[in-house]
Length: 161
Length: 141
Image (cartoon, rainbow over all chains, first blue to last red; front, top):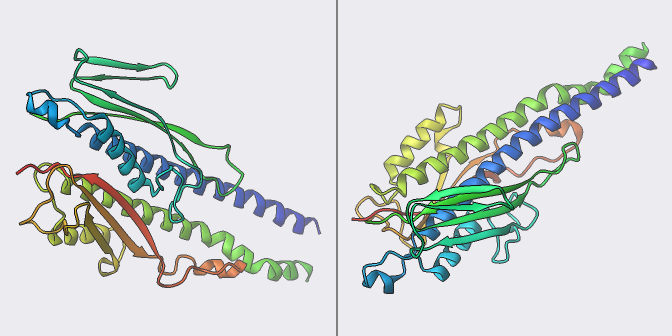
């Protein structure tokens, strides 16, 4: 009888180790996907030129269009609806939160160092740009891991001229 | 006698325990490779010198994936641009500011068959694993 117990105990250990590994691999993939989404969103947002200022020879980012573009690229790359809640086909289960969206526009002196103490983030921009920090929670399928949540940070500069 | 009985009782579970991690690992790796391929094609296709993901680029991508043991014919590409163009035509590249979105899919094949041993139903044969992404084109003529 003790062998039966031993088999059950060993199976439990084996299954938990296996699940732990699968979860870690999936979490890594999710983090990469989130980072790519943030990078693409920040980059696309930073390219939204203010056409009126461009007519005067100034390279400025149009804030409203930049925000809309960033939201669109984030939604498309993570399969979210307009409120940041995941669509049914998305791997994520919890809403994605845009924690920081800041436009460093042409009225600053460059190189400009953006510093955010709350999220411990620092970046130096040579051109006008966009800084984004997005909060993403990993959807745990099993309760073996501690909850995993990320503040994914990204920045992009205006590429022009 | 009792031990044989125990072994028979646990045989299916034991088989599942021994072999299912490998199948799950193949699944994760395939998904990751597919996503990597999407990221790569978008990086190249949306870059300043292309603005499209042509049929030839898709064919090269199939060959790269075939090296990971995937069947090249089964890989499907769904390509779209935010302005409704095809995004796969080298003579009509997508201009800067327009998003190119790419979805690649591959069937699960028999990776979930082993789960029948513990009573789970595998996904339907027409369900596919997907990797997707959308990137803004940088192409300036």
